[in-house]
Amino acid sequence: MTNPERGRSLLRFAAPQNFYPLAGRLAPWFAALAVLLTAAGLWLGFFVAPTDATQGQVYRVIFIHVPAAWMSMFIYVVMAFWSAVGLIMNTRLSFVMSQALAPTGAMFCFVALWTGALWGKPTWGAYWVWDARLTSQLLLLFLYFGFIALTRAIEDPRRADRAGAIIALVGAVNVPIIYFSVQWWNTLHQGASVSLTKAPSMATTMLTGMLVMALASWAYTLAVVLWRVRPMILERERHTEWVGAELERAGKLSQTAGGRA
Amino acid sequence: MLSTFLAVLRRDLLLAWRGRADVLVTLAFFIIVVCLFPFGVGAEPNQLRAIAPGVLWVAALLACLLSLHRLFAQDYSDGTLEQLLLSSEPAALWVMAKVLAFWLSTGLPVVAVAPAMGLLLDLEQGGLPVLILSLLLGTPILALLGAVGAALTLGLRGGGMLLALLVLPLFVPVLIFGAGAVEAELSGSGAAAHLLLLGGGLAGALALAPVACAAALRISTD
Image 1 (cartoon, each protein chain N blue to C red):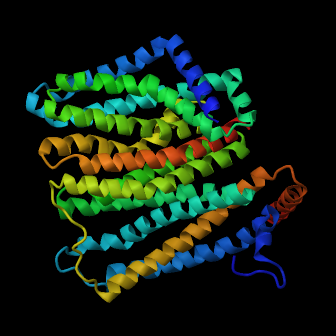
Image 2: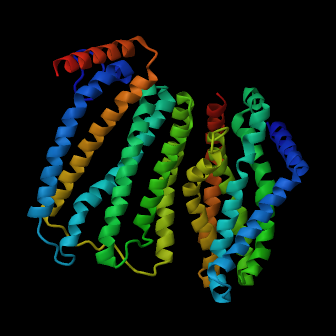
Image 3: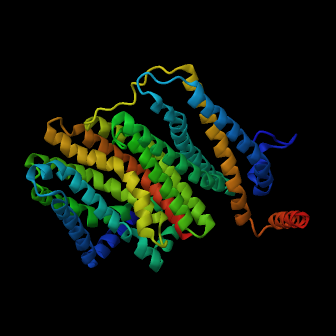
């Protein structure tokens, strides 16, 4: 991450026993940052940003919708990146990272779809339209589900890691193909003639609100993933000495805490 | 190299021939799925004609999906797969031979029956050649992509449903261009663009999928 010890390479954090404490130290900071940024972003979005001339108050859903949609796509790319790193460099931590990212990516995907539906009802008159973006977002959600289901279905972690990495990479190759094919399909079937692209130029406060919310979801993702990585590391490394020592330390801590209480 | 390819191809085709019943079941499944649609949406000829390309393509896709588990399962359980992986021949090569044999024994029969099913749905006869061509180009892509999924889910509990979840989203572009080709031909705008894209997809899948599938097989048998 950002704070290497002097004279040492960042790469040493590729080792699980070095990354584990680092993740524990960084996660609360990112969580705090996420809370602050979300508060600021929502305040900007709901109270400061002006009402949209054509859509009224409904447009304010974009402060959640757009960052979620960005994040859902970006997380898939990061997942595929860690999968490739894992397959090429044979680093265990990379696979753990990609598996820790998947549930958050799926969650953002779902949030984007859900808020999109809520926005669509008053604006388009229907919760769901087979618009190119909606459809490819839905397919992205299925790709996330496939990845999560495959890695959970395989008991041997070594096989689960590698199988998941392959399907993540196959998915990453296919995502652009899916996106463009859906767009093509949509233009040929243009029945409802709805378009999202004619968005008028945005007021600066709207844009700022959206960017702050995007940063908030970055911080949230980092916090959640770092937290999720820790027990996964412990579970996988449970036969090593350092995990034994770590668990003993944690056990003593909770005992003294219990004694004091 | 070529002799390995031909040997694996011949062996798999022979096995498929000896187990003809499986192929017939796939075919029967395809026919029944197509026949279900008139019951579901009503037998109004205009409506059937409108949905015919999509229905035929979805049915072909499902028939391919349901037979995919047969691609490696038997070789996996009797140890042939491990021996093949241990051999010095490039894995992508015999994977390609196996997928080709699989397509010849399950995809091709479906393509052969599809025009008859098109007539059942009152598809205009002008669309039939394009339907056959699009299926000929598209179903091998389904087999190649599906082979990666089949290799990854080898020997897993509930592998069938998992396989569907993994590969169906990847099948969507093929479905769009395949069914779209027939519709474009019927609407008069010409199917060339769709068919060219399908051909490009097939070339890409031929280049990438066997390698990914071979890697997946190594992971699954490790």
